[in-house]
Amino acid sequence: MVKIRLARNGRKALPHYRVVVSDSRKTPNSKCIADLGYFNPQSEEYKINEEEAIKWLNNGAIPSDSVKTLFKKAGINKKFAESKVAKAK
Image 1 (cartoon, rainbow, N blue to C red):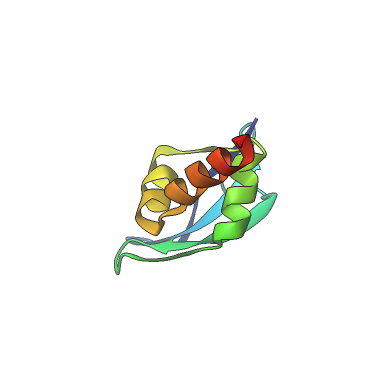
Image 2: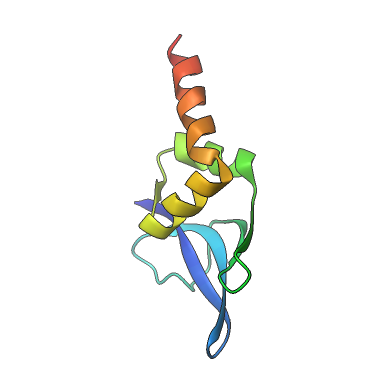
């Protein structure tokens, strides 16, 4: 199963996360299939490639709870739902 999740980077007590697409059977820090962006929790700064994220969601990738929250902030969930409705018509 393919998942979209956060992979931790950074040093002790100063985490920095990458939003990655990876196989659920592997660890989050192992080699990823695709890198979608990053998230810095200290400054609440994030950058996510929307087109790639929507492409992976359409292909069946399942986001983790924390990634769902990031996608909601970025508006990707809304765009994904609109793309599903547009494909249905």
